[in-house]
Image (cartoon, rainbow over all chains, first blue to last red):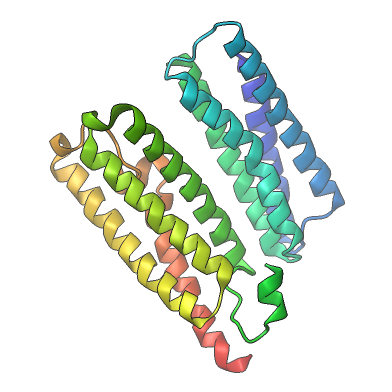
Length: 119
Length: 142
């Protein structure tokens, strides 16, 4: 389907994870720049959601079923912003760790999305 | 979360490392509940045992997430009990799937000790029990 976009999103998610992991290592909470990073990754996931829905509307079928595909698309779009909101309330390094974890989770979701589409 | 901040005498469990736990448990709730709901709705007959166990795991995860967010001594104890139950569940089901794979035509969340979920299902309760026990140790000071 959207192989390039899947790879780009996964790599961006891992970069975000490394960046926030670095912030956590230096005992820093998430800052404005991190939130811009989260916004970029979230935007990629949202574009993927739209592209995925458009492809479904065109009649293309994911290998492992439409419901699972859409569920994973929604999950991957919600993953990073949810952690971002949590880190707003936790102004310590643990906010950064949580966002870093969300980046890793998103990367895993991208791999799964790839599998689900391919069958 | 504002409710817990207004009552300083209630132990906050969802702060610091606890926040990471809430996040990971939240992910597991979404993963286990949506997966089992879909499987039970569409193909329950294929592997009823596996899908029921996944649903059960989702319920336990949901309850632990709730207690962590709520905070307080009672919730902390309830969470400890559930985490212990969760650990027992992961180990039992994990061993069960390895010893008798024929009972599980399809995977559960806890199959092979949660290998399909990066072993998070087995690591999470251990971390949570450690964190919950430490939260109690800090309590007399506050």
